[in-house]
Structures are given as structure tokens and as C-alpha cells.
Image 1: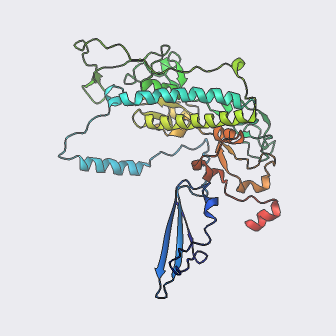
Image 2: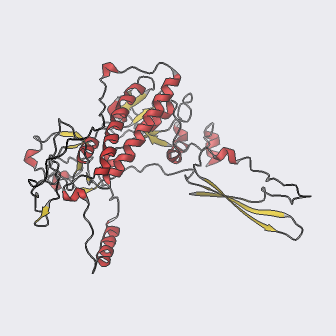
Image 3: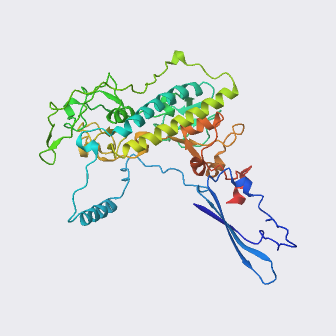
Length: 426
């Protein structure tokens, strides 16, 4: 939280003859509303014997910082860091063991007992529909908003022309001196596809290496929604009505459900939207329609990420520390298909660790273009910010910038007009 302290320019005169006085110099608060979602004021003043009040400080606290560091770049030769360091995990485990002495064991979450969390089923349907809406809207926005992808690396750019930064790490990058070769971007460039194996029984045996081609692979977000309660006829899954019975640390048997009454007819479930084919895509016809479409796309993006983050708190998701592979389930699969750096030393096995939201739904950051009519200058690179490709595409289409993306986009940073001003600023 940023806090700004302003001193002598804010003062208040003493009330004369019962007339109420006003604060002077607070006109700048209107300009701070755009970047401060929560604005709190704290006045510190003292009362003097001469019946006058002098302000000493005005503290303005903002929920969102003005600037934030750009997302770090991890080399393919190094392992991704753990979401929580090992030292802190061990310390928390020792503390839990110490607190659990002479106390009854706590309740096991339903997913670990083979059940579904009933209250999260509507959320799973909303996440799935938000993903479909996002895909359909992105196909429409790409018809009216230009976006480019490099032919040699995975970098993309949203804007009238590609950026001039020489940051290409693809093949023969040294011969091109790091320059990108831009081409038309597609949906898969904006919204990176992340697939995972579909599990009929999420508590069943791990997928061996020999069955890696017989098990279907579907989008990881769809698999998470299926395990959270979404029923798709083309991807059947096992639903238990009674919790499993543990007979060992890794062994269990299903409880006898023959004594249970017949299941009641399912209540009407939310309707699942369908993805549009490329031939069915109709671009927006006016500027107003484009802005509304961009706002709807941004809402779908936030709903999908926010809902998936809540589902990941109860349904375990694993990610490989060396490659982008993701597995939705309590433990990772045994398929030896990791092709990351030095995979021969691990015999192609994945290094599974707890996944974060960016592993399941990669944001794919791109450079933020402050003014579409002015191309980016490579000399002013340190003044530009970054934003997820979906957010940048919606902002250039007319949507309002969300507050929590402003720090990395550096929307409040003044960009110099030329290189001379940049040298003076630095």
C-alpha cells in the first residue's frame, strides 16, 4: 500500500464569527481517484492558543502501488522456484505437528476422500462458461485489433506494428542480432493452450509411461472443472457417493454403496456454452460494440482466473518445475515426456511441484502501448510497462484498465518525449 505524506501546502484557517472554513490545496485528490481504488485520508493537526488550527501532515494511502516490477524471466536451463520455499514448508509442518499433539485429527477435505465439494459445482460451471466466452470474444477482437507474433520465438505484441526491442531468443537469433520477425497472431498465441491428462478416477493409480498415448488430453482448465463437478458426456468420470476407506498410506477401497437409495433425478444443471467456429465469427461493426465486447472479454478473463484460483485451493494441481507440463490430480503422472534442459539425467521424468495459477492459465505478458498512434522506442524501454496479452488486447479495444494491472503497466509513469529527456530523468 502506497502512502503519501503532504505537509505545509495543506492548512486550515481558524473559524471566524461562527463561519466554517475550508481546506485549501486538496484539488489533486480528483486526479488520484483513477489509480487508487481505496483512498483514505489521515489529518494530523494541533490546536494553538490563538484559536487557529494548523495542519501538520496529510497522509494518503492507496491500495495499489504506483509501480511494480515486471514479471521475472526464468531461463529454460533453471528450475522454477517453489511457490512456497522448502524451508517455510518444513517450518509450517513442524508447527502443525506441534499444535496437533493431544488433539483430535481434523476433518479431511472431501476431494481427498473421493467426493465432490457440492458448493463449488456452480463455480466450476461458471469457470467453464467463462473460458468459452473468452475464446469466442478473443476471436472477434482479433478481427479488429492487430496483434503480432514472432516467427522464431514465443513473444507476441499487441499494437499496429511490432515493437523494436531486440529480445528474440529463438533459433538463429544471434544472426539476426535479436530482432524479431513479426507475423499475424492467432488465438493460441494470445491464450496459451495448456493441456492435461483426463482422469476417469482422480484417486486411481498414476498414469504409467506405457499408457501416455491411450489417455485423452484436454485443456487443463476443463479437466479442473470436470473434477470439480462438471459433467461432460464425452469425458466420463467416476463420482462417489460415499467416502473411500483407507487401508494404507497409498491404498484404499471404495465403500459399499449398495445400501444407499437410488440417486434422485438430477436437478437442471447450468447450460454449457459452445465454442464458435472460425466461419461463424462476426467482428463488431462499430466502436461502441467493440468497447462492449472488450469489457465483456475482460470480465470473462477475470472470472475464469478468479474461479480457477478458488478451485485450486481444494483440488490439487501439479506443475513440472522444468517444463510447462500440468497435471490436475493429487500426484503427477509417470509419463517420461519431459524435454526440458538435461532431461536425460532424469530419464525424461517430470519434477512435480505445487502449481500456481499462472501455470494453469499463463498470462503471457506483452509490452503495454501507452499511445497507439506513437510506436514504441527502443531507447525508452525502461519506461514502458507490461500486461497480460488478453488485458492489453482489451485495453486497446477500449476497455478500462483494471486497478490491479496498473502497477505493472506503469500507466502513471511519465514517458519522455525523446532520448535527451530520458537521460535527464535517469
